[in-house]
Picture 1 (cartoon, rainbow, N blue to C red):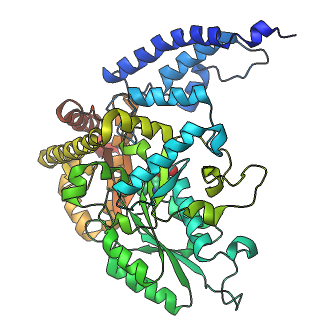
Picture 2 (cartoon, rainbow, N blue to C red; picture 1 turned 30 degrees about the vertical axis):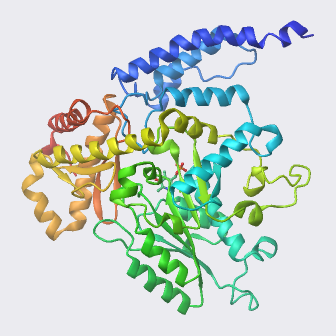
Picture 3 (cartoon, rainbow, N blue to C red; picture 1 turned 180 degrees about the horizontal axis):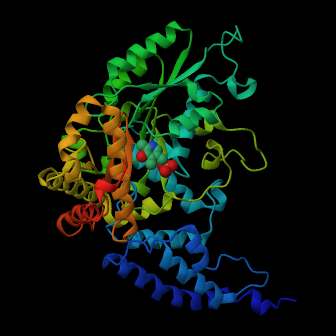
Length: 509
Ligand SMILES: *Cc1c(COP(=O)(O)O)cnc(C)c1O
């Protein structure tokens, strides 16, 4: 029998654990800011030997569990280190940790108001405030989803339910198979550089990935609006029904912003839903410079739905993603099912508008970050990242053997190749005369260098493909603590050093 005393001593037990955790966590954060290794890299086989992954029959209590916590800290990526530049998210910050901690203590669920009253109103207010920042007006509202892909999926299913509600009950049977349907094969239009979650959403909806039309991009990697309109017209001529246009605000690889304003005119003309995937660049709306001078997000007020991931550019802990809309009560109106045992008609029961049930109250994390830093503070974080990316671009341009993929860089990613001097004389002729050879050989060069740089543990960076180009380094400038000379110049040195250690003449590319 478990005694009452044991049941009720959670506070004391937590007190002891928090004290141990406190010290370990601070050490981890200090190591990150002092540029200790980003990661003590191990292969899965090595890691199985190092960390105890066996799940026990009998509990190991505080000591056993804390040994595992220690190992988890030791062998994980230390994202507090600004040299973690591999993905679009960076490390979080103190208020980010506190917000996750608060969520853990509350263990709340934002499906219905009466189990999470404060957290629900935070979600209502922060989605409204973001919608208003995007110019969506007084009815702006939205929902949090478990990531940008989930937000994009919710946007697409919402658009389909709103435009073709019969599909909710009869399923998707387009013309010509169903001559009385009010729609032909449904088509989605998005740029060739969009995130794959748009394809996934079409797959989940049962439209199939063939229903996605990839619109070509211009030399700045933005969707070509003339091509969009032509492709929509051709689709209509085939008897299909274009219904969803996705504009990307900040593409995943290059950071391009599609021209939302002119895309919206096309969407209106052809009765399409306009979604903006701002998972990466949407948060830039917090910057006054972006709002008032750069204008990258102009036209956001005209979108029917807009995805934003504070967990990327704003340093809020994963996950924190929302989809906002100017249409009042959009999500519950078009998505709800009569689940009377859960939803009793309260408009604050946010879960009714989703395709899920229980929901993590992720809104609290951006709410607290906003309260702590203010809109200005969050905006300055963006401005700083944009400036650092521009400064780093200058460094790359000036170094011998480095070549930028676009000059200037489009946003917070800096993309470039490194051409070892052994290939310097051939690379231009490969590029001009044998693009396939150029692509294959340079891709191999980048992969070899990338592997060495990442395994050193000093940096974590990524490489990316694009169209017909060879793969290139994609360095993401996001952490507010990244320093152009200390960290970014050092990265270029590390790439040069890695190249010197490779006997290129003996490598078969
Ligand atoms: C990161 C990203 C996504 C996906 O977001 P997750 O939160 O990782 O699901 C979608 N679209 C774009 C443009 C992105 O950069």
